[in-house]
Length: 200
Image (cartoon, rainbow, N blue to C red; front, top):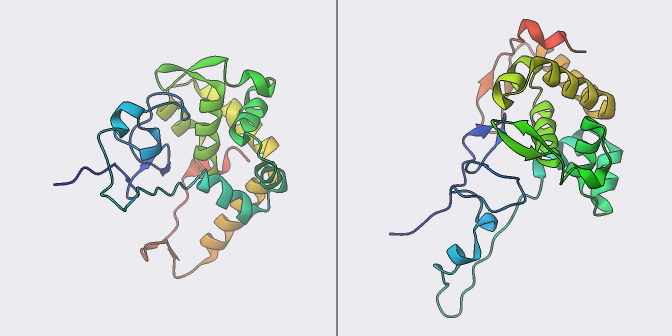
């Protein structure tokens, strides 16, 4: 008898945690079920807390990027967050080689629609944090293989700390004779695809 938002922590989108589809820029209102903070004001008016109670929402707030940067000791990203910078705009500026202020206004075709460079840079960054390779990026984001390779090379050049950390984690996992265990207690044996070493 209750309405629930779609917090889908059991599935991924672009290789990362997801909570509903994202048909527009991440900082705009979503038209499909998703995070509560992305609901339009008219939709929020349908809900009211009982007298004496209040709705409280906790937001991960770019948690995947923050945790990755923390594990990798990516001081540039960590300091940018500490100073309140628009981290995804800064990442997009490096990936697309444009001024930061243009990342919200300039658009490119990505995932079948025209999207801001900031949104595209955010998605590419998160996918690459999860070690997605250019062939899969090209397929998922509906971009050319040349563009996928370019984004990958630009990202690796600008996120050297994360790349070093990824390599260390892959090496450690590959040396683990008893496999690796994920956050949910499920054990896996690492089998890297042949393409995993093509873009070092």
